[in-house]
Length: 370
Ligand SMILES: Cc1ncc(COP(=O)(O)O)c(C=O)c1O
Image (cartoon, rainbow, N blue to C red):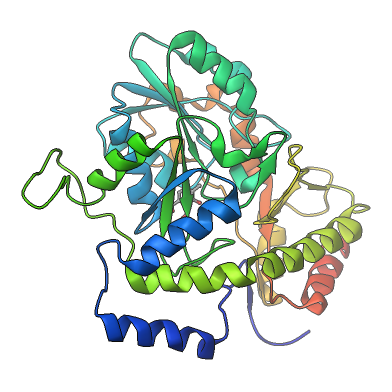
């Protein structure tokens, strides 16, 4: 095994020389931001690639989440999952909204749609669900509940770039879906994000909100934020798109190898997909259960001593952080499956340039304790 450290992910970058002409163009026309030509081109290219009608680019996924909630005028209480990256529920706090955590499904680790109804109160205005690891939520069941109780649905689709379910892009579900183009994501623009909008009107409102609430040169119609993606990031996104299929194909090969090599290891359970027709292989989570020879944390420590740095995504649960733990819905008794997953999960390294030798070594190390 090489002595280098292998992290859970490594950003994909296109050949540097191919980015230079984009930079020359920016230097030439001196448009650096404010929805310039590359921003416009990336919105069009992403709509084509993702199979969506309208997209609004953002400086990152977190500001996009905060803005998505504002654009739908969500208030009061929002039902969400404790099993996610903390930005999901932080976006609620930034809007003065109370998160109401609901437990997850044991197989997909997504919010359990069957437990949502019991958490609805007269203050509930929306559901903020996460397609965790890029595996689609039960979108039909969630929409049915939303329709029955007149709730908005926002999907945190930070992990779900390019994922397709039974009826096309998973991003077309709910009222809005939010993507992240952070360095660690399947598609990155260094930092970046987007909101998928169902129609031109909602995109226009979101575009105002991400630009200080400006509606024309001298009109400000809302207390908006600065959420714009710069021309540098947009240009990079255009180039990244040329390599995205190749990158996802390489991830797929790694995913298949892990599954093949770990399938026989007692106590290691590979997470299955949730029926998506096109997956993106964003993460490779395994659950380390009691029948494995080591605890999850002991395996985590052992791999690190060998230069393999997996991550315990998502441990701790969001509901365990100080700003959330006092909420009634954070009571551990209400979240047994989420707590169990958080105590067992280990995300193994997966990224396009990860060598198959390292994948094999990781599998050998894990299998060595069977
Ligand atoms: C589920 C989830 N939601 C939101 C975010 C926030 O995205 P960003 O880092 O682009 O702000 C991330 C990752 O960073 C994430 O994993």
